[in-house]
Length: 193
Image: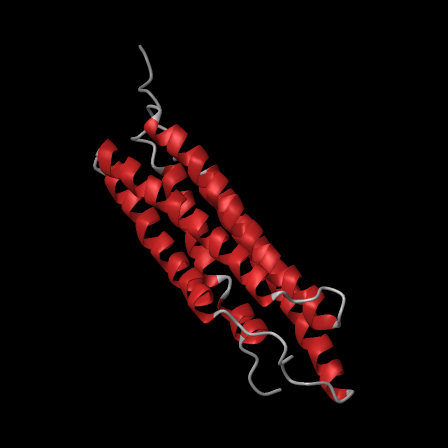
């Protein structure tokens, strides 16, 4: 007499949970940097400083292009998940390739903004925190690019049916797209106090 086999264990989704925790940690990092920015900016304005240094011209085309690129990254990362769930290797590869290309375009636009604005890092609080905030965002996108390459090798290397890594990748790009909304509003386009 034999006992029936036990049910398969539920999937643990460690990669998806780990990505979600990394996204929460990144949000806390940016939130802390933003709090320091607002604090130092308030002190600077209380001492009679300018609201926005007029020496720096924001490159609007590149900045807007970076923002649009992040939202397009979400779309293409979700397309990769959709294609992989249907077993469509060609469209999965195309979607992941476009995600990688868009991430490279973001980093290129960020480098252009740095070169074009030529913010002095040691002038006052603005320069140091400008590079800290934008550099952190560029690092988030570079990490996403590395994640995209790893996901592409894994998904296209024979594990197309395992869509957890692609779902985690899509979650990461959603996080990366939402991340600059408040810093952009505060750092690049500072309104009133």
